[in-house]
Length: 258
Length: 258
Image (cartoon, rainbow over all chains, first blue to last red; front, side):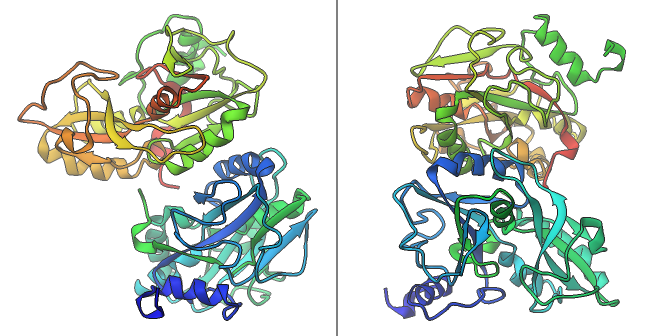
């Protein structure tokens, strides 16, 4: 395929595969569904899938690959999940190691990949609807517990976007439709209600308070499984580095309420 | 708990447990979510959960029990899935055996139960909205293939309701909201488009054609896994008998788009 006939999603993945794109995907890809990645040994896959079912708002599963198969055949045929993300986070025994730019050496015949819809998929729709949330999306830890399943447990991670107060209803209405990429917000307003840790963000600049002219809106985040890897001391989990999503071929505006 | 303080859902389950209710649940319980039941050995549970993910419209998972635990702790605390359904279908090596009224003898320490939302949950909402679909709900085989996962494969099963043509839009709008109980229709109109087998219904009276003054509306159905058990020659699957659902404590109108 020549670059001329490739979609923006395919071009992005090629650049990531070739090591030319190692930075965040936030606001970088218009109209394509971005996803979170979780790779686990097959032996842990059932417990994790039940964890996703029990925490569906944080973990909306858009694809599960067959063991050993690194190609997401439904959401991005021809892609390779071992190389086609800009940056990966690797957790061993619950500790995040140095990020890597590909995971070919870590991939095993029993590796299973889960793609979970990312709220980065609807940022362009917010822009189109006139919601001025700016370029910054935060990923924050909270004090809200998730529902455990097998070995997996931990607190909810959220994304936060700041907007003018009169835009909150539009943002809620709009994102309600995008059920596979976290859907409606989990909280609007005071970060303390959900124990959102503004001072130590997983991604984004630290804040001491929400600016007085803005409202904070929080969506469940697909980085939640990485927090579960930490709290559950998971032996091995490979994930996307937060804010460095996998770009699928699915169109955000067509992958909505079924 | 005395009968006076029990909800209609709790009373129904008690009657089923005591063998006083062995008939269908269609249109019998107002406002409570009804669910389909699938019980499998733990060894088959992962493949089945992936099958549900790949066929989410037919198999919206509302709860997965821990192995050996017959209590649906989220959707009906205190209930017992071995006794609290009116009638069970038992599939061995892909063949449906004689239905039974309880499955205590068939339940094992490694049994896992899946509750899948049922469209019987929104019939009362259709009535409230003035959609006159009558008392009859059909369950029909189709020629539409589902997406396989592991050993599980087969064609989609649908429910069919007949209504006046001018009620189709209302029925579509209304059920779109009920994403955990199959959501919007999968088809409206000519049954042949989806190969719906009117002459040999899984449930409901046989038909040779749709009455000329009615429109047929089809929703994905949680009996689909039973067809997969047949086509996959599954060694053992216990399920609800079609149209004989499990009544949860969840309120239909609150268990909607998340």
